[in-house]
Length: 275
Image 1 (cartoon, rainbow, N blue to C red):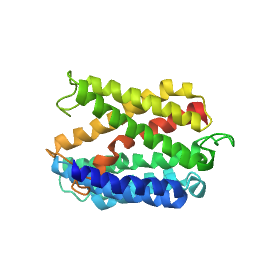
Image 2 (image 1 turned 60 degrees about the vertical axis):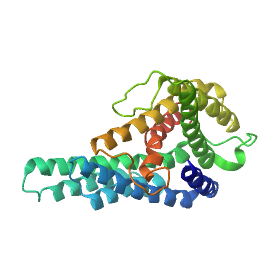
Image 3 (image 1 turned 135 degrees about the horizontal axis):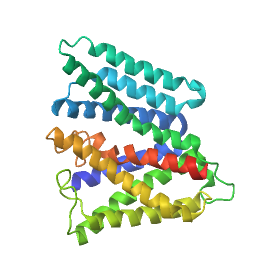
Image 4 (image 1 turned 90 degrees about the vertical axis):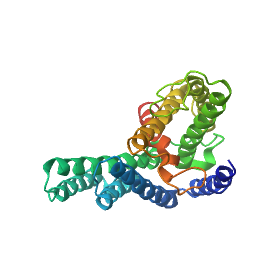
């Protein structure tokens, strides 16, 4: 717990500082996190028995992040670059003398790249979100920083609520073959916490807090899904953590797994109902 507290005391202020600056700094930070998460993801895939091409996979993931960071510059060419990256991974897999291994190589590398590149939706959220009205409490943050802050606090509140409620009241567990500590009480507690925080942030962004009735549970459940997805990968690799980068917290992928699912869900909701 001491290591976890010290790591959090360093990482959380640094992350909030990056968010306050926003813009290119935020894009660079997301790209750096994606590279670290990709390294761990490809290691887990290899340990689970799936050969990969980590360098090509990481480059493909960064192309997706680049497309998310500067959509106005690429103007639709990002999808073309991503397609070319998938083709290059396929070509590289042709060298494998066993076609079955070559197919596994191609599929696992592409999967690993697209999986970690879901972080790109953190950046896309800032681009597609509606402008924050001038009189809103969080108007000084602007759309990019304000909506990304909502995503961050919603996921963190889900994790905190699930941990506290699950620890105090958790009895019945679910999906124990993936994560033995997950309880239904924790799930409910996390969803409630996320919903309350989303309501407050929506009000601060000049939106109706009533959207939290749907967006809160969706974000919380997506965060839980992201955590379970990484647990699936770790269990397949017989690994407790994705790495040892952050003392007390495991690897980078362990820290961002919830955002991999929550970010696209929040972005989709904003595009569909709030843009």
